[in-house]
Length: 289
Length: 318
Image 1 (cartoon, chains in turn yellow, brown):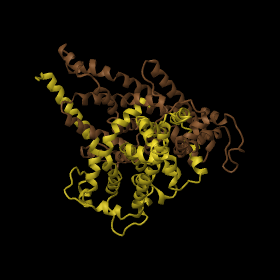
Image 2 (tube, one colour):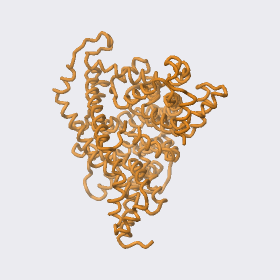
Image 3 (tube, chains in turn cyan, brown):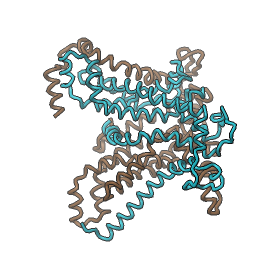
């Protein structure tokens, strides 16, 4: 197909503009990766490093030898695995139950869940309930309030809605009850979708900041986000200095950048998997509810 | 196909309404068992706190408990509305939300229009992969990146400005541009992500429409205007109304993390105020009242937005 001059100019401008958008998006990430891997003395001399002339792992060595930093990564990995598993169990079983049209009371339950999306009683009542339950200052204070969420239940339910009743009827004739149907038929059938929800939960747990700020005083239980924020703001140099090594630490900017890179890495690792699933989820979530 | 199968099943295999409620519930006992953990979760962690908002009308003290704390009626709300802070909080919240609405909202539409015009699918996928990524980064990371880019002492942008021979600019501590910084951050994080929904709507446009437009002599811009834009009109209207409904929500984490002493006057919004008064100063009743005011307005706005969306012939969200 022949294109006229106007079309060609438009195409070129369009490609260039979108390339600029992509560069603006990537540059901050690229920059922190490059600086965090460059040589400390080289960095101090040149200040502006757009491409490292000398590579070095000094910042990473320092952070990976740092007890409180590594402990916070452990805490966040615990959240992202155990928390995700708990959340999936609670959310999937509830979503399946209310996706069965024969269940008496499902309309009321659905309405109540929808209401929790629309109305949030606010920070303080939530805080007081977690406090009364005795979870304050415990890792469970990050997991229990996030076990489920209205949107997740409704999204999962709309997925289970598509599983026909005929399947479970067949299984019931073979002697299954609802529990065994769920465990042996529905879960294997829905495994790809459950895995996708699991990824979203895992990212949510890894990124968790606010609840930790609210519920955890004990810095030994802090997740990575809270420790990272302290490293960046310098307010609590103690976050890193608990076991200061005898050697001269790398410049603080480099440590900060290395810490950011470490905190981003797990997200980058699961990103290709996330990308496969999210377009569908967003469509269901934002248009149909 | 599926729906006919299920419909047939409901009539033949499971006759609804034929059993009494008690029998139906007994028949489905294992389904209720499956739902139980989730129901307990929603009851204890979502509905008990809703009951907890009564302390907004009390002088709640932890030592006496909710049942015995003295009732004070609307005193805390009166204190909120008559205090100096109220107008400041409202102004900051509105400013941040409206800036988002005017600068952030159109961008995903424009970017998705441009992506839709790309001839190369591979290039399109590469750009999409890149611009969706920041959505998954936490606010802590985004604020960290902002700091490492823009701070006076360590930011790379300021180093470039200095090398070019100009004075460094205090991007993070200048109250005048604080709201704009928040908007730019939101754009960096979510403008790419926001294109997904528009691209999905554009994908459903019949290619014949573009052919017809071309036959009639329409150029690229005109067919974008007359074919693509009308196709996504519904989605744009729904999302815009929803945004209006969420105008009271500015997101605690971003504002709290970006705040500092120099910008405290423009960085205090309802959520951060509740955190400071409630968690840091222990004024549970007053801060619950502030939170309740915010949530109640939010609920009214969202319900109104949904009503409007239906009224205009669009699909509601609930």
